[in-house]
Amino acid sequence: MVTAATRNTANARVGAAPLTRAILLGLVAVVTALFLVAPLAVIFVTAFSAGWSGFARNLSDPATLHAIGLTVLAALVVVPINIGFGLAAAWTVTKFSFPGRTLLIALIELPYSVSPIVAGVAYLFVYGSQGLLGPLLEQLDVKVMFALPAIFLASLFVTAPFVARELIPLMQVQGTDHEEAAVTLGASGFQTFLRVTLPNVRWAVVYGAILCNARVMGEFGAVSVVSGNVRGVTTTLPLQIELLYQDYNTAGAFTAALVLASVALLTVIVKAVVERFATVDGKGINASA
Image (cartoon, rainbow, N blue to C red; front, side, top):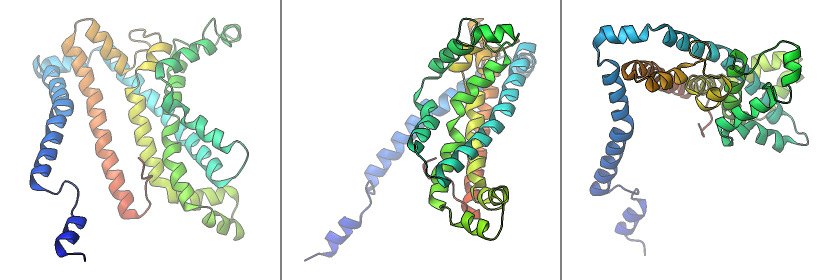
């Protein structure tokens, strides 16, 4: 016989006891304060350690401004390319059945498991002067490594899966019924994609683009290998932070770090807004995000 006490015990939520809840909340608060809030507070305080005038002086440093501009340029180039790649890859994987489909998905996800530094070294062995294509590129007078194209290539590699991985699960759930109906009604392939598929996945595209943009702006490992870290020429913002810190310019390094941290916080805010709009609109975002 099931008693009322047994039913209450069975229906009780894990951790619902007041003491357990207090311990869990306290633990989360302590960890958040020590590992998230404290570093951000140190960045802010140190960046303004010389006052507003010192902050403005460090921020207006030509090398720092160049690093900010180069980082923004990399994002403007890489994010649209990855959106196109993600849409094409997700469309191919979810709308067609073909041999090697599982292998293609694995290749799309490969950058998740490969160290960015390893990726940078691999690019050196392909496009460097002593690499596979190095002699050919030298004959054509095309410079890839230790120049702007290398930064774009490395950033493309590390961010390649972001849009695709947001789209693939969602498009798999949606199936092909809507596209097949559109084709039956006489729509072309491009019309079907533009008017049927894309509206159904638009929030996932935006969400993936936000994550891709954040990764591009914060990427250090692969870019540090392929860019040559030439001050004022191929230094992105993360690399500029390292250079300033090595020069014992702590305030300048933390000023640049504050810019990068502000971008990260803005990304979190935009991400939350997109999730809310997607929920209200009914066009879900990949639940694994």
